[in-house]
Length: 360
Ligand SMILES: Nc1ncnc2c1ncn2[C@@H]1O[C@H](COP(=O)(O)OP(=O)(O)O)[C@@H](O)[C@H]1O
Ligand SMILES: [Mg+2]
Image (cartoon, rainbow, N blue to C red; front, side, top):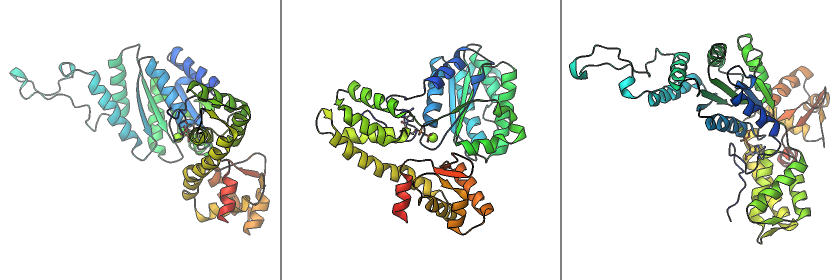
């Protein structure tokens, strides 16, 4: 029996938990046509909450309606990457005989110079417009951009301005983006990007433990096994509603069970392994991306059993509150901490506190 759970970044889960409202809005964006608010869409949330998975859902909904899609990550070659991908789609849409002739044509076609859509002069907007013309009124183009952040402003401006024009022209065009909340708000504060502020925003949250329990049980049952009531409750609680942990716990409890029924003992063994995997896959990657002072801030937080006061963090670190605030901002942008109340910060990834305590 193949393990149905998908504990890796960007992999669609066997059951998408708690996102019915978002899925409905996505479907409306498809059916309501040009001008529908959801055609410019933004998914935000912490690392591992399911942003990439929702971009995939968005893409699937438009592909099912016959659209074409190009997906990129917001790297320094964002616009060139998009151009190349759109140009490739354009070539597929235009059979050679219908490509525009730009050079002198000699009898028999010798010396004919076919317009090359890869020429550097054709900008992204021109290419997209040509592609939309070729697709006709019933099909469109979806662009997805994952991991958007404060950088690449010039390229984001070019994409925003193109999208704004295409929306004004009532084109069959959609843009979906995903990023960490603080990186996104940093980007949207740019006045040239005001247009993107009107995007239909989905702030993805952690999942309700009840919903997690139902989904774990139904996934197990749909794949030919069953799970004890106390076992499914313990498994769901161990996830703390964190989507990545749902897949890790599901995957490991499935592996740990040696019979058709997954019992509490299997869940206990599975959860222990899932925590180790969470540490390797999420905590260590998150901590590696940070500076020494960022980590010092987190270690100062890990002393507390719950939310920490920023004034107290400054005292523990022996630094001014202004200094500490800079690092608070950096850690928020990285999606590692959140601010549950004024003057308070909390770790946003489950079990990160234990990992930090083991480090110190
Ligand atoms: N709604 C959900 N229900 C169940 N599992 C989910 C859900 N959303 C995401 N996951 C799982 O969580 C993990 C992380 O998802 P991903 O989209 O890569 O997160 P992000 O892009 O926000 O870092 C994947 O293993 C995915 O299958
Ligand atoms: Mg992602």
